[in-house]
Image (cartoon, rainbow, N blue to C red; front, side, top):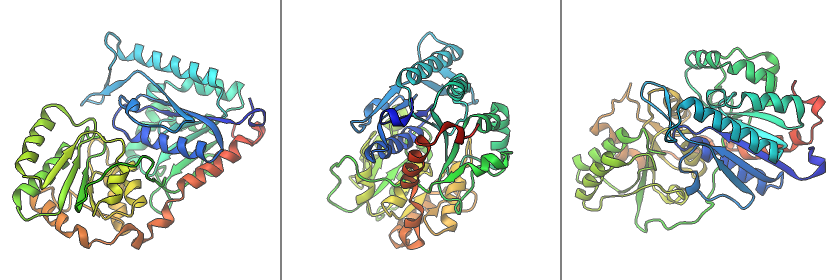
Length: 398
């Protein structure tokens, strides 16, 4: 059904097998598209186990796909008892197809994976391209991985062929001047001509929340699933230097739990209030906005928040299994936006973290390095979505 017959509908697919990044990015996009009036409503398809703990605008809903978990060896297992990974993927694929068939979206935005988790989107993409007016967009974050590694992964998944065959546009949620995530991919000139560099996705305070009255730095490992090393390093710094300040507010994230977190809590208690901690906080934006500085990992959403709230920051990027966070932090440091606590250069030592925290108040803010000019992403997305949904099918990519 065309946009001329009724207000637009948008589906955002977010496989979310690990962490919070895909879900939070999809929520920001869905909110912008509905609040701007470009879309009457939006549905997010997500595999995130914590999707129900987020608030969504009235016009945005979500469908929770059965969860999967990635093991250390890179394989996946189902989180649904009694189902193997093949059965779970089939169930996810059927739920995706049914939702799209009944909802009849004017626009489908696919996050990062051109064919979805284990190819679960392939049949739906073929059906949409052959029989409907739905426009298809592939959304990519600013950095995916090292070019050679990414090229091998996309070749294995048939991702280049899917991108060429199905997608009307490719949206890169970052500026080309910072990094090109598609370098090394054998995309055709036609596909590259359909690539739109949106800029970063600006964040704002959607849900007000209480913040500490006294000065503090925010410590956040994002979702927390791979953040134990960073948290350990920050706690070691406060344990090592009794005069280190200011107060630190540690937000663990929903995936840093169990015995690891219990041990951290014992150490936090022993610091006598110099560090306080909390678990998952879906309203973390107010904490970002009011902090004196931030110690964090290098995920895409965290980086957008640093720029949006103009925060001095020390990024401790993970380097396994991907170099994505390190590439982002390294490039951001080159541009003067953040400090990268680089394990290859600085070493992840207690002394290095103490020095970084002490120097944090003296760093320049991202705005002093021109960050405001990097944050046009949501405006560009709104503009491109409006244009695509009003575009005759014969003008779209074939």
